[in-house]
Length: 314
Image (tube, rainbow, N blue to C red; front, side, top):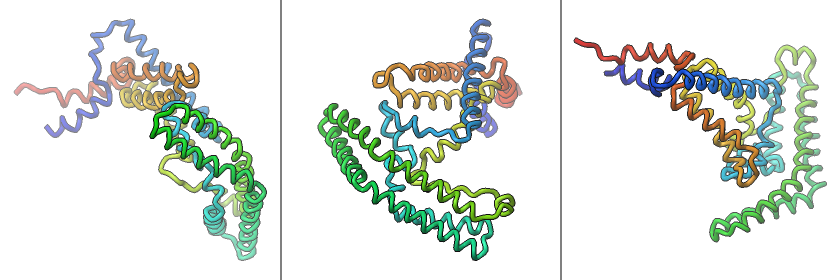
C-alpha cells in the first residue's frame, strides 16, 4: 500500500492518458511531431536568451495590456523608479557595495579611501540628477497620485473611461520619468566600474568581478525572471524533446504561454499574441494524451513504475 502511494504520483508524471493502442498510428505520429516541435521551440527560445546574456523581460512586462497587465508591470524591477529616486536607499545600497568590494578584492587602506571617494562622488551625482530634473519629478509624482485616484474611482464606479484616462496618464508618466531613470542607471553602471577600477588587475583576476546588482523590493521581479526564464525554457524544451515527464513539462509550458497570452490579450492589442494561445492549447493536448509515452522516455518510466502497482495473484 505504501509503495503504491509513493509510485502513483510518478506514474501520473509520466502519463495518464489513453493506452497507445487506442490512438491511430497517424495520430501517434502527429503527437510525436507536435511534441518535438514544441520542445525545440522552447529550447531554442531559452538558448537564445541564455546566449544573449543580457536578455531582459522588462520591455515585455511594461507593454502588457491584457487583464494581467497590472500584475506584469509590477513585476518589473523598480517599475515606478521609487527605489532609484530615493537618495537614502541608494546610499545604503552603494555603501553596502563599497564595503563588499573592499572585502572581495582585499583592498588596502589607500584603495579603501579611493572606494569611499567614488561612493561620495556617485551620491553627489545622484543628487545633481534629481535637482536638475526637479520639475519633471514633481509632475511625475502628481501623475502617479492621479493614476492611483483614477484606479480607485474606476473600481468604485465601474467606469471604463476612467481606466482609459489612467492609461493615458501612465504613458505620459513613463515618458516623463524614463530619461531621468536612464541617467540614474548610467550612474549606477559608472559607480560599479569606478569601484572595480580601484582593484588591481591581479585582484580582479584572482577574485573575479563583483557586480553591483540591484536590491530586491518584492519576491518576484525581473531581477529574478531574467535569470531563470532561459533555463526554464530550455528545461521544458529538453523534457518535451526527450518525452520525459511530459505531462508536467507540458502543463508548465501551457501555464507560461497562457500567462503571456493574457498579458497581450488580442481584443486589446490585436492578434499578435494568438500563437502563444495556439501553443498553449497544443501543450494541453500533449499533457492530456501522455504524448511522452510515444517514442519518448516516459514509455520506459511508465512501464517500470507500473509493475510494482500491478496486483499479483496470491
